[in-house]
Structures are given as structure tokens and as C-alpha cells.
Image (cartoon, rainbow, N blue to C red; front, side, top):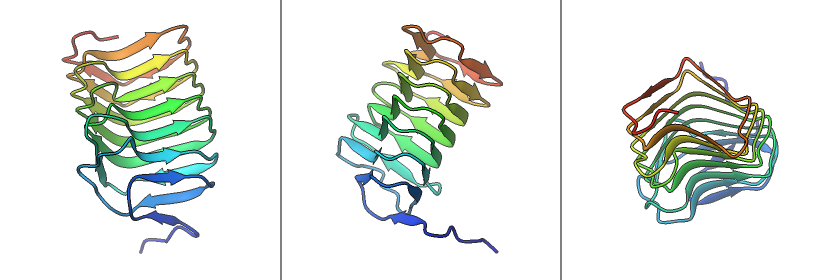
Length: 178
């Protein structure tokens, strides 16, 4: 028997903006969405459970866009054909896991001005114009048990991105590894 999440909020339409803390469950798949983002997170203390669903874009915008927040978790989601699949800007003490990102025009997972985040079991492929994982001025983050293949850069560390750890991660068939 599955125990329901108490006070979970269900996302039944996209694009969607999260403005309050809480547990959010994506209740639909949308293979094509012509929007600047699929889901935007603008609150601290958020769990976004994609529930195995897909959000596909049009090659522009970000699948999941999060900025200036703390303690968020993104999990169990598939993102396809965005500019950045996931975009973290000034994010701390957060996590992302069990995510598939493919065919982005920019980065699969962009981590900008962010620190102390954990990325686990995230697969990124087909971001031919940029990186699977792009760190810009971001430190003390960890990528574990992830895969980055068929991107321009497997993992790109730039602009004082220091003390990031990459463990048990496959980096293959990219134009450049790290």
C-alpha cells in the first residue's frame, strides 16, 4: 500500500510556477510545451516529484527553472528539448535525482552561482551545443552515479567553480569530457 503525501499539491497544467513551500507532484506529461519554462520554482523548502512524467519544450527556455531559493528537491522527471533542462541560479542546499534530460539546445543541467547541492542519478544526453552539466561560479556541489553522453562538453567547470566532486559518474561520447 502506498502512503499518500499529506498536503501534496498536484500540478495538472503547465507551465506552472511554485510560489509556496510544499510537496508538489506532477500529475501530467506534456511532450511539447511552447513556453519559457515548464516549472518555475520561486519558494524555499520545495519538493517537486515529477512522478515519472515528461515535460518537453520547443528548444527555448528551461524545463525546470529555479532561482534564489534554498532546500529544494527535484526528482523522478524526464525533460526533453529545452534550452537548459534544469537551470539552478543562486541555489543552495538542494538536490536533484532520478532525472533524465535530453536534446537541449543549451545545457542539460546548468548550475550557476550555486553551492552545496547534490545531483544523483541524473542522465544527460544529446546537448550538442553545450554541456551535460555546466558549473559557473558554483562550488561545493556533488555529482554522483550520473551519466553524461553525446553532449559538446560532458561536464564544464568555469569561473571559479571549485571544490565540486564528481564520483561514480560516466562521462562518454562527448566532444570534450571535463
